[in-house]
Length: 125
Image (tube, rainbow, N blue to C red; front, side):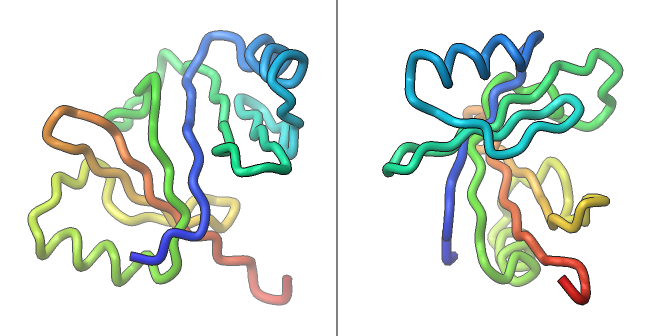
């Protein structure tokens, strides 16, 4: 597996308040703000943070996990097949999000949620 970036997703009641905390006190900056999600980063080796708004109507398994470890990889389709062959507990099968990101989720034996993603830019981008 070729991990090219990592982040931690935090599911909270008030993403804007968390963002203000991390930007005011810990030197993060907002790199993406969209409805229900704020992506925070720093210019050093700190792990990126993705702050998500809790959605009480979420029906996806483990969608409301309070903390999710995220890895960006290359060739996610091959990793998905490898993980399936190895018997990893995949909780959300490989799928493409509307914004172009491919994603899958799995859980370790203790229930820690891991999300693996690959950004595939739209044709012509």
